[in-house]
Image (tube, rainbow, N blue to C red):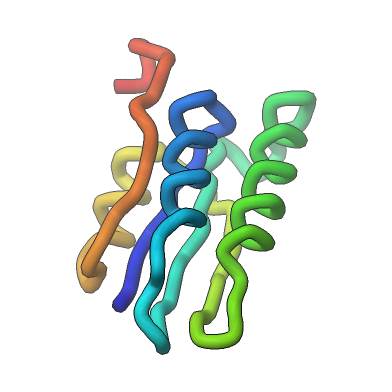
Length: 102
């Protein structure tokens, strides 16, 4: 099984991460833990919070029978996630809490 866990630092994406960690993943699963930032130079507390959330999610999902790939990508979140979704079985994400980003 291939799955994508998309995180943005929000409370709802934390809930998605906790849900993903509670699932019994089939042996051989590949789970991509992904955060998206607008620019590579983006810094500050929000970026640090996102990076920390990605690290925590990857750690909570790790197991002997699955591969976890953690990455931060640059671009518009919706566009990046649609591009990544091509060959996936599952996508887990929270609702974005900033209406200007929809």
